[in-house]
Image (cartoon, rainbow, N blue to C red):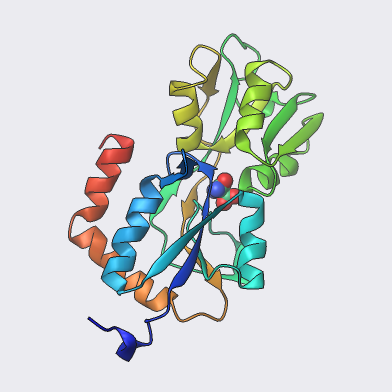
Length: 229
Ligand code: GLN
C-alpha cells in the first residue's frame, strides 16, 4: 500500500505529554492513554504514519514552533491566545477546570474563598492563566509537572490546586485518595483539540478522520475504556 499520491507518505511527528493522565502519559517506557489511542484511530483513518514524541507539557508549544514535532496531542485546550499562534483541529473533548483542597479543608468551597490562599497548578497551563486572573490568592505557584502541585496539596504546603477536571479526578480516586478532594462545580468550560503550526497540511484530513471515528463508534469505545462510559 502506498499513500504517496496523497502526499502523506512522510512520517508525522506527534508531540504527546509524558504526564497528563488518563489522556497521555508515559509509564515504564510505554505511551498510554485515551488520547494516545484516539490519535492512533484518527491517524489510521487519515492514512497518516506517525511517531510519538513524549515530553513535558512546557516543551510542547516550543517543539511545535521549532518544527521538532508536526502536531501536539496532549489535552491541549483551545483558546484565543493560542489560536493567535497555532492551528487547532475540531475539539474532541469537553471539560473544565476544578478546584482541589485537602480532604479535611472546610474553608474553601469555591473560587470566592481563595482570598489570601496559596494556589498551585501546572506552569503554562490554562489553569495557571486562570488562577493568575483571579487576583485574590496570596500566591499562585506553578510547577512544571502537575504531580508536584498535587504533592504540595497533599502535604498541605498549598491550600488549593486548580487543574483539568479529569486529571484531577484520577488523582483524587488514586494516589490522592483520602488526602485531597474536589470542591464545588467546574470553574469554566474548556475543550481539547489537536494543535499544529498555522501553516500545516494535516488539520483538514484530521478533522475528517475525527468525524469518522465518532461516527463508527471508536470514540465511544475508547471513552468507555478510559472514563468508564
Ligand atoms: N488543558 C490544559 C492546557 O491546555 C492542560 C493540558 C496539559 O497539561 N497537558 O493547558
